[in-house]
Length: 102
Image (cartoon, rainbow, N blue to C red):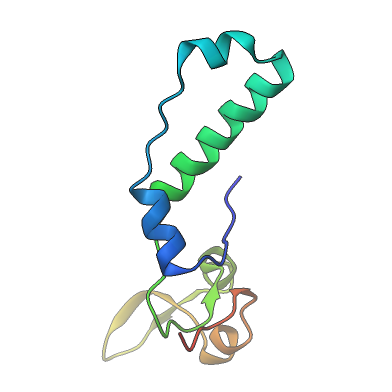
């Protein structure tokens, strides 16, 4: 599963620079459920560390596959295009993530 989250730059930097050192004594005394929660937090932190920040001021992010579903070929005396997408299809493409001003 992939998700997009909104997180402050300071928090993102802090997470990227954080490493957990779990001492053996603590791990041995955790319940199975607590150990699962600890491991889940490690996975979430790793996912954030490995994430890709979106660039500032990006436009709406749309589903490329939805656009390509409506693509068609044009063959004219001037040129041949493999796939062409109509401008109206681009304008009406489903938005996955809204554009950002910051």
